[in-house]
Image (tube, rainbow, N blue to C red; front, side):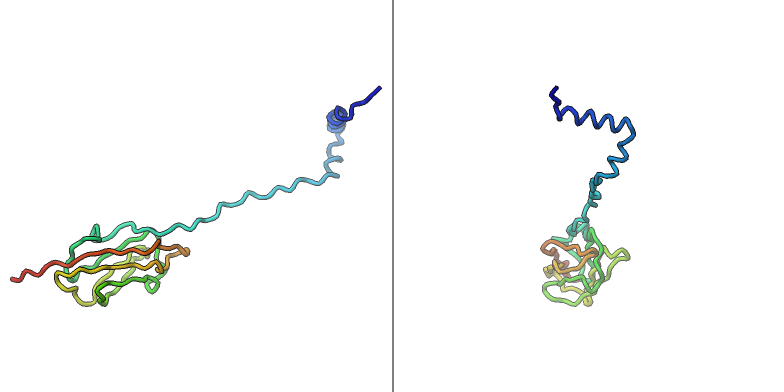
Length: 149
C-alpha cells in the first residue's frame, strides 16, 4: 500500500487539533511577528493666505494712515519671525492677532498721497510646525490722491 504524504498532512493536522495536541504543537512553533500598523505621518502643509484687509489687498486704494492685514492658514511663530518689507521703503509696525494667524501692518508715518506700494511677505517667514509660505507673497496697493480743499 502506497501512502501519499501530501494527503497525510491535513489528516494529521485534523487529528492533532481534535486530540487537543494543537496547543503542544503551537507551543513549539515560533509565532509570527506582526508589525504594528504604521501611524500616518504628519504631512507638512504649506501655508496659504486666507484673507486680506482691504479685500482684495492687491490692487486696493487705501488712505495714507490705513493699516493692512493679512490672515494666514497657520499661526506665525512670533512677530520677529514675520519677514516682510514695503517698497518703496517705509517704517511700519507689525501686530499679530491673539491666534497669531493675522498680521496687521501700520505705517509709522503716513504713506505719501497717490503712491504705489508693494508689501511683500518672504518665504523665510516662520510658521508653527515648520510650515512655509510657498515662494512668498506680494501685494500691490496705492494711496488715495490728494485733491485739495
